[in-house]
Image (tube, rainbow, N blue to C red):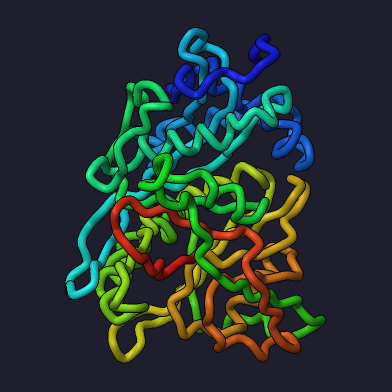
Length: 369
């Protein structure tokens, strides 16, 4: 932690890629907020973080990087820190008919140790992160008042996304650039969530209508789902805006990995259901993660992706299998709204937000879990 009583001037601050010891420090820093309340001892939480950064499909080759804001004169001490997850994406500019492949990053684990709060470090770290991940062609000039740009840059993102538990005001204020040429940072993309509370009784039998999906089966569907996004994007959203989509490649595996780490003793894990092909040869399916605030048991079935039509009986069977009484789905699908006595629709509390780098007005499609 910094021993200086005053804040470090902006031109002395920069972003560094965290080394192994700094990564451990970031985990220690946010264990009281994100690990301890979920029942994880500190050693277990540190070990879980190391496994997350091991050679997993979603973390290798710089797909998962931890970054720190530091004083250039004391680069070993973290003033704040965050993580990036690289994701393949699609963009479809107005007037175009074929989506273009692109890169995006999900910003996560944004954290400022309590001793450093109130000094603007978290906000400035994220302002600098635009210049770490963003394509230089879509960025305003690096502000002179900020000193030299970060030495290490990824520089290939056309946009970046984050999910906020504190609303959008702070993250939108983390602007791209400074002064009159700057643009808003991560802007909220309104998203509804639909929640069902399971009623006693009801069907849980399969009757041969669907097959359960294990981890490997679910991961295999990432490519199929990505191709569906590519095919469907030209027919989705507002053609006057640049339509974008984050592809599910490695995302499904990441969420399944988190489930297995959170509930290592849960019996016979299942992560989705798939049905026979429809008249167009597409197989309806859904993939989910069961989540909870404590490793003793999950409490919510969160559906990550659903290719409809999926019978509600399959969703209920998955919820019963995991012993949960609540099901949550992002987005506007209304086909299940009358199930379980009716759905509860409300604005997404995770506040999905997007910062774009030179794309103009953006319409984020397939904004799934």
